[in-house]
Every structure is written in C-alpha cells, then in structure tokens.
Image (cartoon, helix red, strand yellow):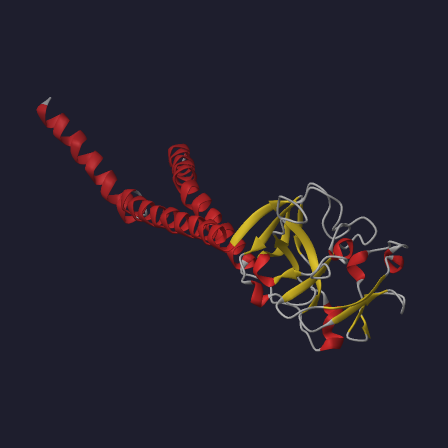
Length: 260
C-alpha cells in the first residue's frame, strides 16, 4: 500500500512538471502577474483620467434655451477652468454677474475690450466693421433682427450674446447700464468645451471671427482625458478577464486530452 501511494504521488508530480513546461501552472503564474499588472495600470489610467478632468473642468447644467441650438435647456456641459484674460471672441463662457442673475450664466463672447459691436444693419452681427458669420445661431429667422446700436466695449470687459438671439437675456438686455451691458473678464469662471449629457461632443469652433485675425481658442485636454480613462477601463477588463478565460481554456484542453 505504501509503495502504491508513493507511486501515485510521483505520477501527480510528474504531470505537474509537464504542465509547467507546456504553459500550465508556471504559465498561469506569469499570466496572473501580467493580468495583475494590467489591472493596476488600468486603474491608474482610469482614475488619473478622471482625476485630471476633475481638476481642469467644472460641470454645469444649462437651465434655459438662451444658447439654443448649440446647447439645449437641461444639457450638462463641461467648462474648462480658465482665466478671463485667456478668453477670445467666439468662446462660450461661464460667468457670474450678480446684476443679471444669482447663478452662473453661459453666453458667447462676441466682442472684447476695444471692439465696436452692433447688429444688424448689415444683416447680422458686425464687429469692428466686419460682418461675422455665425452658423451657431442655426436657422433662427429672427437672429438677424435682434438689433442694437453700436457699442464700444471698454478695456478688460466682454460683450456677450446667447446663440438664441431672440430669447436670451444677455448684454443687449443691459445696454442702458453704466458698462453698456459688458461684463468684466474677471467674472469668467470657465470656457465651455463640450456637452456631455446628452452626449453631444465638443463644441464647434467659432471660425467666423477669423476676419478679425482672431483664431478660435484651442480645446482643452478633454479628449486626452477621455482616452486615458477608456484605455484604463480596457486594461482593467482585459486583466480581470484573464483568470476566467485561462480557466476555461485549461478545462477545454483537459477535456480534449481525456477524450483522446
């Protein structure tokens, strides 16, 4: 009996050595290490992407149709934290102005300090004597009729309009005030980069202001952050799936050997 037991043990060990040489337990240990590394790296990328985004962006919900059709009422947007001095013509910004509302507002910058702006003697918005192409106002037939007389924007201030020109309470609603409806650059809290709910992607750049020599602002790092988070999620999934997949393949190989 003792010799039979010893023989059984020897056979078991021999089978284990053979499996190790063919990618069994030894190969499994390597696979486990690699899958663990993939999960760890994936977690780092996933959390890093979201953490970076949390530092750079602020979420806001748009309560009205004043920015329609670019942004609809109820849309959730991400605004990159920027200094007011970085804002350019065409940017959609989040700002605070107590005289306008007791909550953050979202409008489009159409003129900056030193500009003259008016609408709509030439059939649309005019800045520094140049007619501005504004495709973001959509097919609103009344956009070109939201007239106001020429305003000279003081230095350090911004003139802001909603994309829905007939339904927005913006700079045109405050023209009789001391600053002629303009807002200080210091009031800007962020520049809107994307509509994230419902998922509508990055805002289109406002290229119409190129006639003034003003290039659209470069988008923030949102695409890179999303790519990092997506890559991290993929690595986590791949690493976590290794164990079950490897086990399934091992069982199939075992069944094939037993059947052979």
